[in-house]
Length: 250
Image (cartoon, rainbow, N blue to C red; front, side, top):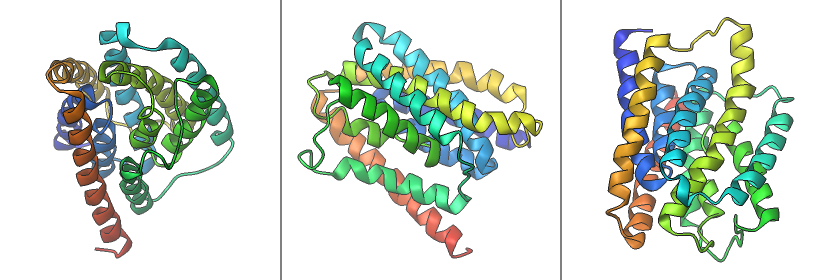
């Protein structure tokens, strides 16, 4: 890996962690697309999983008093189920398909709330959330907007939403690392960045998460949802354009 590519991953780790620190998602979606520019597709799943595991885990720790642990526990059961199921399937999307799937995921934020009546605070639906969200994470590589569908109808505050979603995503990213990391380890870690990239990216992602939390404290609940939808839409359109370019061979 070139020095420029490694530096790019380190810088994006900080930036995207800060964005996720504010909105609880969007940063992971942006990071996944950035990784796909410089890494093989299979390696993006592992590297994204590792960096997002740290970012989400640290965010959950910083906001631990706001985490709704019963939701997290049931979500984890669904996540482990999805990991076990997808682990039996040999699946690796092409780069074009990866961008297509990532570009479609943000469209979920525009669905009218009444269309899908789910609530992650209910145990049965928390399990379905863990199963389905982790399944999407293992195929499209990201699932933040899909996860949000399960939280928009809850009575949680913005701090509880960000903290609880961060804790749930720890388990979702663990499954991603296990499913895609095992074959890479067996093949000598081909395509994975050198250790120095992780040594810099991990503490910077923690710093970005803390910085994002400071911005979150200054946002109202209304602006929180408004800005999140705008950011996700812009990212989604950019990814669909990239997918079209790759499919057309441009």
